[in-house]
Image (cartoon, rainbow, N blue to C red; front, side, top):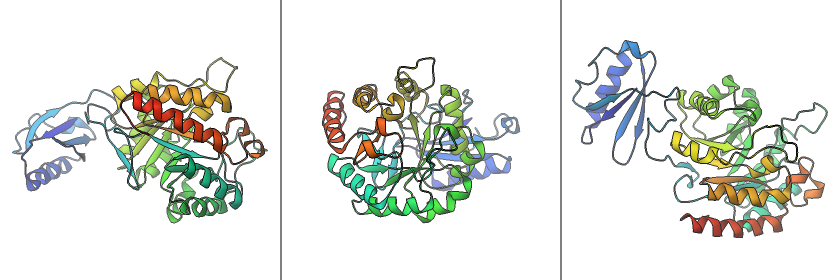
Length: 338
């Protein structure tokens, strides 16, 4: 349930409410909006006797949340959450494009990629030092030293970095290297131990939709992160698996407005993994922005034909620049900015 705090309640009165919730063996989660402060109550709600909180001076109303996902739901927070990454907002009027190669390869490749990302006007950079692959015999990523290549290249152009975490044992390394956004990939969307651990961090998390996950399962996965204290969550739609074989995955554009209705958290789209072909990426990217996405994850490589991973879907620097120009027009048409 949620406890709505009166507009003019003092900090001391709010703290009294939080203390009372803790005394009842429940966990309070505070969300402060522009007009209202709301406290989410986690735990066995049967411990709350009728009127146990309503009588407190700071409490305006106590309301049950009917959704199984509590903290990430619109019922918990009616206004959109903007997740800040080094001053760059996800959510709100601005649309962000995160671009970079599928995998980190060499220092030279990453420097060239960072230059292309910056020149195109993207504000963040992606890259995988650790790669989950279907076959155990294909390239699995450069590993630990890849984070150094990535960090050095991105820092030269003042680009925050996004990279995928696959193993809880690498969390300390990610923190040491200053990873700006931790990505949880499609294959780990329901790795609940991993979700719990990133939930204990103060680092933004991109949560990719599982390739066969329902909207509800996706939201519940985010709830694991939020329930452990980290509310800096960005959803990422990357296409779902169907019977179709003409392209890699089916980009579920419908998920964008549905998620906007169900959750206050931002949602971005990965058109590269959805289409699986570079020529499809601009079409899917434009559709995603038109449908209301807060950003994109786009694969680009200085020399796509030489990429060690997913070469078919990587854009060249020139193609990325053209795409950014097209996306600005789409954003302007719907009252937003890139």
